[in-house]
Image 1 (cartoon, one colour):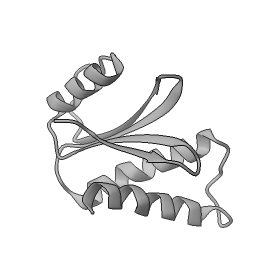
Image 2 (tube, helix red, strand yellow):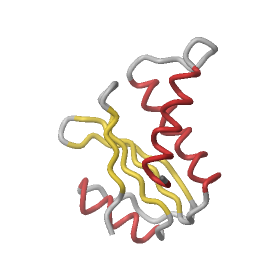
Image 3 (cartoon, helix red, strand yellow):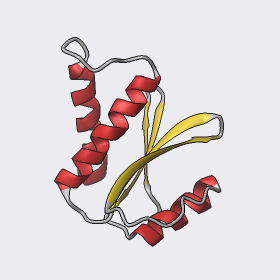
Image 4 (cartoon, one colour):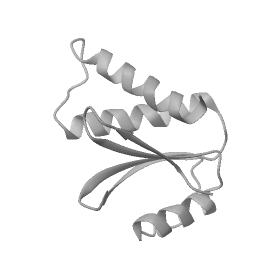
Length: 110
């Protein structure tokens, strides 16, 4: 199984999403695509980031196909990715965060 690959072209951000897969499968995906071993973990969801091909990659994983769990991890990914390019989440920028969450969620669940 391959992660869902999402490229957001306005800010040139790369996201991978492993939705509803076991931690062992997620770990294998990360190793195969980034050559990083993320080790053992007992979490049920997470967001991690890597440098791959000179670009930052934000990877979202959930062990269950659960929309609230997915949105929780998407929120972490958006805060991190937009923060990395200089955004601060506040009343002036919150719409960018909301649109990004919607964009990623639609790519994953339709």
